[in-house]
Image (cartoon, rainbow, N blue to C red; front, side, top):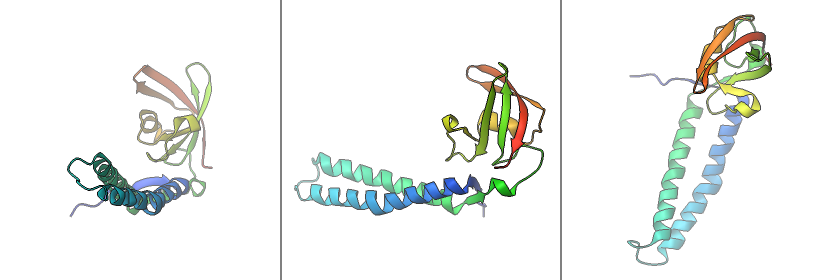
Length: 159
């Protein structure tokens, strides 16, 4: 029997996923059931576009619920404030100096929490993978679609 791979995430990401699945189950699912019932009332289902659209939406909602429930069941919630050390790990906030001497700061988070504009990158992203296990002062090279980028790790924090 294969073991399910754990999905690392911060408590905030777990909370957001829980809220999202609750919304899908308590708001979206009942709304689509009502839409299906209303479309059924129109009669012939074979040429009823409203009915087919509602059934398709119902399938999408059920797939999203199943996916989120799966992620939550495999979640490994990590609190970065309980971590310490001198190397980059999941949950660490890393201050980098790029090739142009510009400081950038990222927190390594799970895939569902990643938002580069917010300073949160996935541990699975090219930069995330390049940073994991590295220490302060090390340089990392990252291959991106726009070419190779180089960064120096200036600070590692667990906040």
